[in-house]
Amino acid sequence: MDAQTQPRQRLLYLHARTPSVFSEILGYTLIEPVKGFRVEISGGEFEWPYTTVHDAVVDGWQIVQFPHLQSPFSDTDLDVVGYEFVLQKMEVIP
Amino acid sequence: MTDNEYLLTDVDMARFLVNGYHVIELDLPAGLNEHIAEQLDGLAANPGDAITESVPELWQVVEHPQVRGALISLLGEDYAVNSHRHWHCKLPGSGDMQWHQDGTNNRNTTIDRLLGLYYPHTITAEMGPTVIVPGTQFRNAPTDRMATYTNIRGQVPLTVPAGSFAITHYDLWHGTASNRSSVKRHMIKFLFNRTSGNSAPSWNHDPEALKRERDWDARDKAQDAVNILSFGNPLGVSQSDHYKERIIRQACWQELLGNQEQQEASRF
Image (cartoon, rainbow over all chains, first blue to last red; front, side, top):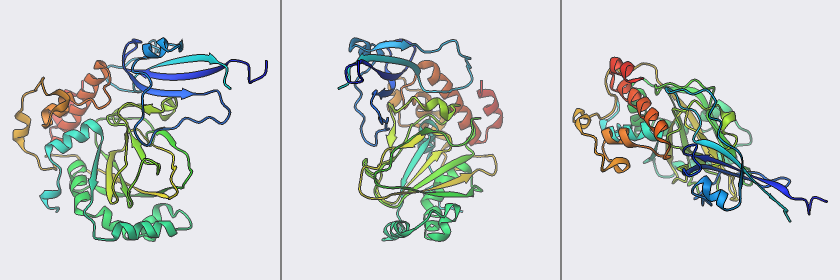
């Protein structure tokens, strides 16, 4: 198989409001398996493809990492925004 | 002493505590923005902190009564203009800058440092605007842990008219979009420091404003300080995070009011 016919891993980082797949997405990063691909913060209105993690799953994305809830927790401090899910789609990229 | 008309109101202050930024459209002398932009266009090298020596008209911006009024409100009458400042020139075709907080991570409730971002020309979405994430100023989030974020719900691109001055909490998450235009995007960053704690409010404070009851029907549409501080949730974060945000911002509010004892009591 060459790179043209071999399925490649598309990655989707979704930061959800809570660890539930039904909660609203607060952060969105799509990484295409294409040489030179860069992510980019939008300077204008960003159109959200999905409202929840579940929407993405319905669209064929598979969750490969769930939020790490075993990490140290503080009830007196705030750290990152939301709970990170990592999803993938294995697809042939033309 | 600054004319009270330029000091912030209780509502302005509450919104700053919730969102972490305040944008002012400065009433500058005619032609000043254009003159500054032309000088910046002509600079061959970045002079770093000496940008105010290369373009001395920038002092008219920093010392403008609207800027001073906002800074006195947030940092006290005796705030200091830090010697660090920087000209951020984003060239046509240059890429974005990912999310970060400036400095290392040891956040607290105090407002003791602010960034001031001056834009001498109108900033469009294509010019690589600064993008900020409201409400992130109290988060202890190392920049490395932001590397998997790109677009965040509630992010605000500072697409602003010429002569705008954005005051942001030093710890607010920020980045920039790519410059897809054919022009240089100029922004001058200034830094301001608190030099002493408040023993009383340093803004146009109305004690009656604190007597409002919580309005559970208004919530995020609230237009008064009490309810903005209670219900403001610009990113729509979880209940757990919102409760913690609220406690931190209330502690900060008490500190700004000069109520040191209440500030200690309200911080967990």
